Length: 608
Image (cartoon, rainbow, N blue to C red; front, side, top):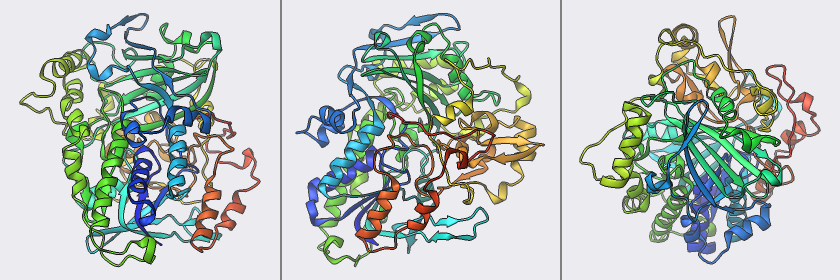
């Protein structure tokens, strides 16, 4: 099934690329976006403080704030108060904004729901003629003669043992003159391409973000209030090397978005990021924002923190890497959406130039690909000259300063590099270790005793997991696979040497040991990608499950993967996947995955 441009991933980078392509090319190029979530936005976990500069560039004549609210009901709330605290166990100290890095200045930014913004962007893309198909998971990259030709979607209708069921439908090959990969952090196709084409320049380091959305009484709500913290509970002294902090944002009309990000290069195998998040909420500076409210949503996702040093080569024959999949998050600014959108714009410009200057008839006219996909090196050149590179280069050494010397010296170095040198230091603090290798043996630490949840402010993991809306068809091959050559690691390395850290760092309770044997509850997976990063020796390979599975950070009345699959089939005269849809229809919550004696229920989630 051919296209001029195929985009894998319906996040801000992929959607921005599709929109810009259509703005430039109109109907002369066919553009398709696929996404593994059940709808656009269903796997987008970010209620963030949004820098609108790139979006304003993409839509110079639109009032995106008004249009997003009209289309989704989500209100982009201007930042009104910008607060940064250092927490001790019982107290807090504010750092005056004057002494904070300029990257942390949120004047002119907005508290938004990124999932809802992406839904609106998808509407804009479709109005321009982009074909968007959620519920289609890219399982394999098509590489022929050293050139990326497209992707193959995952087979559906396979039983746990890999044998076809009555509902079996083989995956579909989607081919293109250029394929843009915008899968987000640790995308499975992106990881494969980095290995296949030797694109890595240095190891990436990640953080795990865990988040809740609360609905609070109006009299308790402070529209536009933004707070970030360092210190307790992750850092207990100025030399603590556990990288991370918290965020708390008030979004109109009555939402509070809270979360903790934990750097996955932490050493203590007994650290439990989810439990650290729960006890953070009990701090006197945090509790008043949430008391009397109701937690309505929960989720988790990894984010790239390696910055400039970890950005790979962005192009290869037939394909390009965009957004967080390429690692464009600015960890000091605590933002990556603006760089993701800008990367989409740059990739679209380079792709349009390449595909329209070849003198080749477009697929939109011929319905076939007649020449090999080009290597669009201009995208790399545009990145090198862009604000993405310059802002990441300026703060290139800050994360490693925290990792080497601890939170106190890390703060001092960040101030030095952002206020004085502005990134012009003649040295480099390169990150050279995988996060999995940063975990220290358990014998050097003691188990951490976390307080029991109260069910009002703090929650057990399985109760919160229900709020993610996570769902996978139960009778399908497991998508979390122990690498064949590392089958011995769980029982011979992870459990005896590291006290099974996967049973604590997973924010969905996927991994547990029963009678000293590893049990993988894959139905619980919220697609955070943490396991492929932090497992001892990286023994897990994360692959895509059937399209549409995973968390549902969405409103239930919106377009579903089933609608998209029907549209896809009718649009291209392909067989509909009606049998698979029928297999899922009419199921009650009791028939949904039940890995740990916990009934899965459905929530009408407002967006996360």
